[in-house]
Length: 308
Image (cartoon, rainbow, N blue to C red; front, side):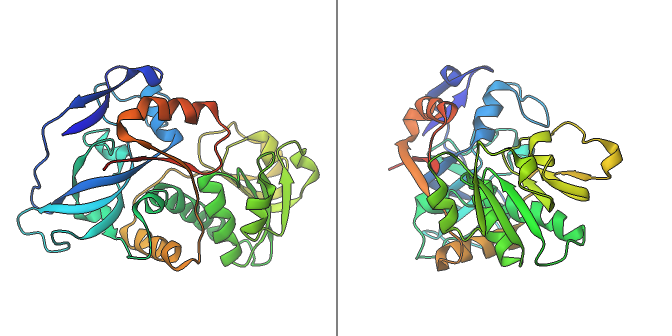
């Protein structure tokens, strides 16, 4: 089969398309024929070694979120059958790229996967697992801080995958959402239902005070300036400490896979209760160019690699 591996740490040029052995399904596994795999900033960070849990020694395969069809079932595996459509998240923080999703076939633990509803296509489905679970789990930290329903939450990066899901899920939770949009992308964010949309050029200190900040970019202190004293800031990457005198609680949300949660979120997207969007698709063999496009910025929606 064809796969994409990072032969060294570095920029997009380290990604190489190569022939790899086709995987076999072990106990509790299925082999998935990949139809779509999402390209995340986390994939780009993995190739440069700039990831929270430390660099991964090459060679390895990037790729967290996959969607495709089951083509082989391992021993004592009953969750899925041949031909089942599935979507899931390779817990890359555990596999460290062995496997990764940038390949024509992946041997996946059944716990990584959920059934893909007929109403949802492979490409759209591949944008859900990492982004939507991160958003939901980060907002759960806000709920644990006992922020009352109806309180205001600022979501940075609401034009992006995590921020877009966080905006919608916060609305479902009964919060008043102030969402920061990329330049020229206010209409999309407003369409997600945000009560107030602000642009990236706004000084966020003038937006608050809000009870919580979901810092999906993250912006760090610039976003924390909007939160009230003794409020909470949840960031998706490590950020500098906030002035202790303010009593602000800081939380770091790193993804953890939750199969039951993923099934619910995928179902909501399939039913139209949550929205996602795809900016562009590219063939798997153009993974290096895909990383260049992500690094260049300006995409409105996710970039998804496809396999015929």
